[in-house]
Length: 356
Image 1 (cartoon, rainbow, N blue to C red):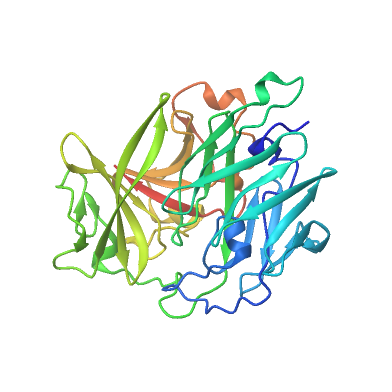
Image 2 (cartoon, helix red, strand yellow):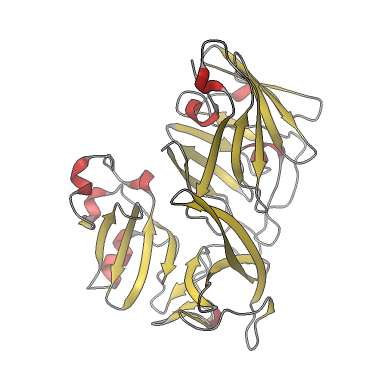
């Protein structure tokens, strides 16, 4: 029996639905939102997403068209608003309930109602059941919480972990957008990765105020989120840096010093002077920097590239592009394991960049 929520994610499809009437314009400035995308906790011109071993495909209006290469109609039932309200998986029916924006939970046989909570970004933070199952003492007040890793230029999460030791990695492909497209290769001074930071921001500099950034085209939106570390919850202050209505990076605050502790680059528009950024391939990185290094650290669970030209800068890669099983003990024999480009699938790309 599948006890709760995320424990089922490897065996049943990990969410998906459809809105036949979705006609929103696909642009970089106005991320596309439909019931299908919302059900997957997605937004923007998503073409395909791979979650665990499942692949979901969408048309350019945000409608789910295929699940693992097949029609989704046999898996899902919909209400009059074309929202998925039930899913058949592993011989069990999961009945979903919604508020006006998103799913708020579902009912699963033998356990009952499971409710979802979300943060201000729309990321699911917890799933909880308060039902008692006969003969199963551990099936009461089951509470799964999530913490998130990298996000991309559209604000979609690429990895998350829960408090029962599971990690989910997503690989997302997008349709080309109109307007200021994500494939623009020009480098703006406000969006250039420098030796000490990114654009007008430097590690260790005073944490900026919300609003327009003086002398630049950037605007800061102040946010915060709750994270869990070493068994305790704490609030992290995050500055979302906006450029042309797109979140291009996030600034993380050092509480003790009121300074910038970390810069997380999310957009393909942010690049080094040599043109390397999110979306650049491993091959291009190694061809550009003679000092390029590639490795894995179990401490943070990150696959990364680094180079002498940009110290304290990690060019992060997706676990989905790694050919081997990272749970293999050989990757835990030291804090940092050196890898080779051939350890990754052809065309593997940078998914985010971390300055610290």
